Image (cartoon, rainbow, N blue to C red; front, side, top):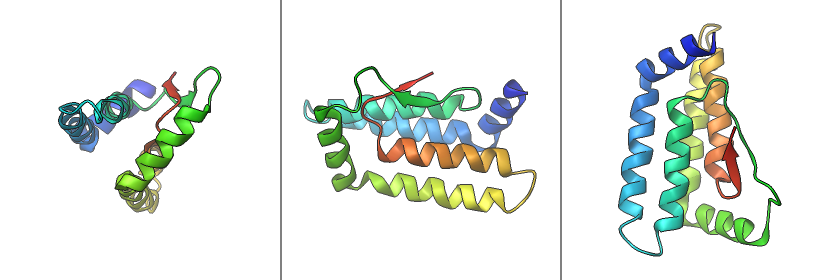
Amino acid sequence: MKFLGNLLWLLLGGILIAMIYYLVGLLMCITVIGIPFGVQLFKLGTYALWPFGHELVNGPNEPGCLSVVMNLVWILLGWWEIAIIHLVFGLFLCVTVVGIPWGLQHFKMAVASVFPFGKEIH
């Protein structure tokens, strides 16, 4: 069932979401200061490719001081807008019974897109 959910996720826009994450991640990696942010966008892109059956969890010894500071900088730089987009899509999909699983994935991605530092994909 996870395979079918992931396949439908990819066909119905998941691949587009992942490509946007990867493209912006590449742009962020152009500068040395942007590399940590680009790496987090790559992580979110990987999660966006195959979200069913995976989840983002806190890494060992997390949340640490550095990840809290980097998450704060992440939010202040405007990356919270990604979370709002995921919330809107999640609400839109949860209106129908058929779209609820995909809406819940958008809600999980919204949380991950607000606090990406210190998280690992499992």
